[in-house]
Structure formats: C-alpha cells, structure tokens
Image (cartoon, rainbow, N blue to C red; front, side, top):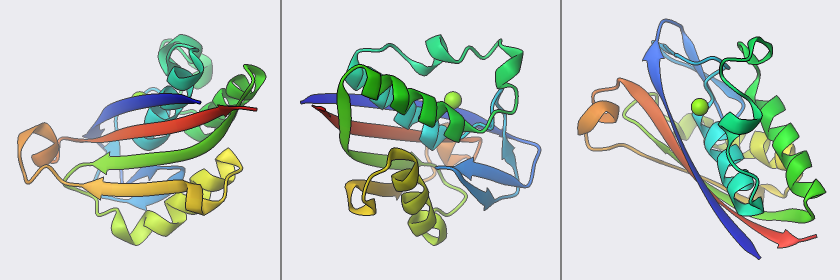
Length: 157
Ligand code: MG
C-alpha cells in the first residue's frame, strides 16, 4: 500500500462562486487561478500523484500552459487517475479537508462527496469530506482565500 498527501491554496478574487470538489459553490468571490482554482481537486491530484511517486500537479499541468486556462479541474483528476492506474495502483480511499472561513461547506458536503466518488469510481463511503475554519486566524481566517488538504491510500491493482 502507498499513502500520499497534497495541499493547495488559492486566493479569493472577483466572482460569484468557487469550484470545490467539482461542485459550484455560490460565494461573494471567486478564486484566482489559471484553471478553475478547485483547491480540493488540486490537493487530491497531488495526493494521488504523491502516493504513486509521480511528482506533482504542476509538473503535469503547467500553469503557464494556455491549454489549462480556465480548465475544469475534474479533467485534471481524471487524467491523474489514469496515470495512477497506469502505474499499477488502485485508489482505496480519500480523506479531504477544506480549510477556510467562508464559504460554508456543510450545505455542499454530500454533493462534493458524491462528485469526487464519481470521479474516482469509488463508493462515497470511501471519500470523506471534512471542513474547518482557522478560528479567524491568518490569511484563511481573514477570508483572503481557501485551502485544502488531501490524504489518499493506494493499493497495488
Ligand atoms: Mg491549485
């Protein structure tokens, strides 16, 4: 078995929604990013790549590459899953944490869990979505952006 972890952060900017785990979450701001800025899917991609020993998301989807401008991060996850499988691994579970003051994740938790389970071809019971604030401390507490952390476990397929 192989474990992997990933983290990601994006700053809030103009917009009226954020993409979080492949789900559109209405908010007073969007996220500044070359792609759609989905911190949860980016952290998950890094965890998967890390567990498989395949580097990080920036190596595979460079943020200077015009083809990824505004990209749906679900397409990154699908591509990463293909790489992980090609390397001989299957995903066992994913444990994901959204870190930020806003927006509230709870109303969207079930939808995010279902979407990520679908993208990973896993039972939703194998995908866990947690959310925490930073008790108003730091840049996340000041609602300057959003962060996510992911941990995954792979097994030899
Ligand atoms: Mg990112």
